[in-house]
Image (tube, rainbow, N blue to C red; front, side, top):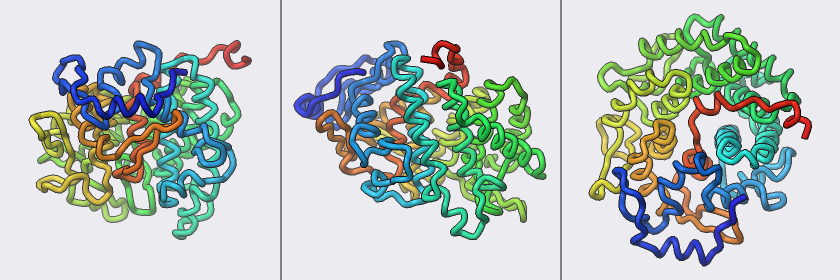
Length: 398
């Protein structure tokens, strides 16, 4: 692993106002509170080495006994209690951490087994009742994967698939096959394309996870479940993409066929991020519309922030996630300029601190702040993850 940043080293970074970075439309100085240059993050895969701050974030995730998120496979959630994360958020936290870990395995092959180990822990925790219990408590049933609830089972299925793809370990194979059949069958049975989250609440971003999981399934089993993707994208264009702005509406309600009349930045950013891995041209078509509708560049072009809704000046909106999901989208789209501008806006106010080789944010600005910053900084692209070389028999045996 790369050497962890010491506290004195971090202090030097935070106090250095005039650190020159390569010029390709980015700011020429590394702002206080930024931990590495944008060029350094985008070079990790080529260098096969994580930046020191990403190594320190891995340490946060699993180094400290009992309170690191990935310390053990048990149903203990002290890390989320310390973060004061609501129960409903934990499923997303585990999932997005896992997607970042998959990219870590691609960046540094020596970390592939370690990344797989942590995804295994995340899957074990995803199956704890503390993670999915809201489904039962809300009165939607006692089985969280049998019907609907794509906001949970889509992530679980993608985690199953990425784990098997990365490690070759088939301990979840039976569950992955069964859940993929459930998702594929439910999509085929529905009179609309996709699966609802809660009853009568359909969200495009949650469905993007499920469809991506089917592409991973096809990669492993040489099936053609991904054939259902085109009808889904057609449905999105017909029902859920606003013709005026070219961005995604918040939700669709299958019972009434009503669409919420507002568009959403975080919905669009999340959905386009995953769609790009499946159909790059679709995402490229709508990405300029997204930026024109939601992104505001300021401070002489050095920073950018994102409005959650159109035609307002309110940044991030009630969910506090528009800018940070856009950071992930910018990385997926290889938009280094927007990534740099967004990170200049997001990271310094969050007050990053690296102590004893462990990265923490003292002032996170959203419920999934460190998870999504982690993903954005290491993300190699969902299309790239789909092309991960399958482990050889010898690699699996070691």
